[in-house]
Image: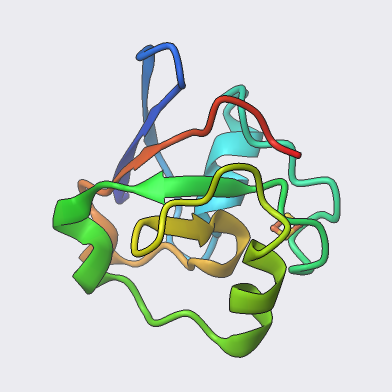
Length: 107
Ligand code: FES
């Protein structure tokens, strides 16, 4: 199972095995990682699953579509090039080792 490291704003790390086919958001939600609210349940309609992708991983992720890009405008303190909505990132073997940092708060 791909292993994902979620780093809270405080620096606390959560290393979680996430089944392929789930999203990075679901991996956090299902394992009790605080900091991702996911109010819309993954429909790309709330932006409360925002996270910063570790720079080493940005280019390895599938590109953002227009819907994600538009919704990201509503997220708290986005960082151009690093911010993504984690409900839009499907977990695959290629994402084994992914590191995401969680913002100070969601909107
Ligand atoms: Fe709502 Fe990702 S969970 S946009």
